[in-house]
Image (cartoon, rainbow, N blue to C red):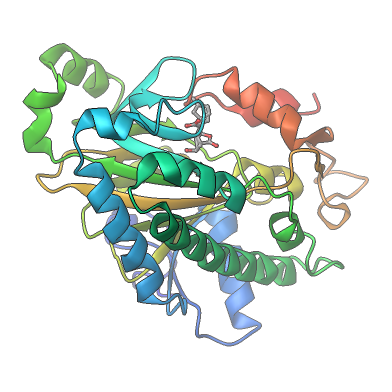
Amino acid sequence: MVMPSPSPIRTKKTWAVGIPTVDLSLGRPELSELILRASEEYGFFKVTNHGVSQRAVSRLEEEVVEFFAKPAPEKQRAGPASPFGYGCKNIGPNGDMGELEYLLLHSDPISIAERSKTICGDPGNFSSAVNSYIATARELTCEILDLLAEGLWLSDKYALSGLIRDRQSDSLLRINHYPPAKDVKNIGWDLSTRLDQHSRGGNGRVGFGEHSDPQILTLLWSNDVEGLQICLPDGLWIPVPPDPNAFYVMVGDMLQALTNGRLKSVRHRAMANSPKPRLSLVYFGAPPVNAWISPLPELVSPRAPTPTLYRPFTWGEYKKAMYSLRLSDSRLDLFKIQ
Ligand code: GA4
């Protein structure tokens, strides 16, 4: 892991200059230890030398740039996002808003084929670009989860990745387009919204508000435009410099529950202040809807300091809770054993 010198990122000052970075070409066991350490300390890290073909990314990037360039009525044929399809500014069912437009797709190839008919004049091409990106993202996500399982000394090496490899996996792909800030006037930005967001701790236009991802692991790619920010354990928000040659990995709520709180899901947000359009491709690795989530036995000890923190629940039950809450709510707290 490339850490800002002189030592692991500890102070606010060092964090401002570096993001934990894991070179996936390193050997084991060093690699699994580094991934585990970054996941424990920050729930977030960047991976380089990941082996993902640039073509899989650029093919999907080209398709979605073409889609977002279309006139609004054409894009709206793929919406509204409830939850899947095309969405503009509205996020989720409970009134959250952001300065973005997006496509939210389930990873199941049949639903991709259906949805593609509303997105593109050449649906075969579009769905093939989406499917190959998802397959690549799933592989990388599972590789990282297997390294984590190794670092955690889990007896079942595939306890984590197996949930995502399952044919019934509820994994998703979110494609976000944050329009350039110069378009602010054209999309109804006003001073009161800006002040309101500033008073809530943000600085500028919020593209996608503060939240943690509900799933197991998130893999994020973005073009070379800044916007992503993560929240450090001490509450400080720091910007993540964009790097289209890398992927960013985020621990989700399900991984926090499965590891009995040893790994913590990272709170993050996307700002939309750049004069250039930001594009992100976000893969959310999720379990099947009826999968039971409870802390893995290796992460629980019958005595303190690691008693069971969360009661067992299904991913479907968690999703129900998440859709009933606002984006920034801490959903996992509802499943804590008091
Ligand atoms: C946040 C992470 C993913 O983008 C997402 C989002 C989902 C949605 O856009 O439909 C949610 C949000 C996310 C969590 C709370 C609910 C549901 C919007 C919202 C307000 C696709 C996901 O899985 O959870």
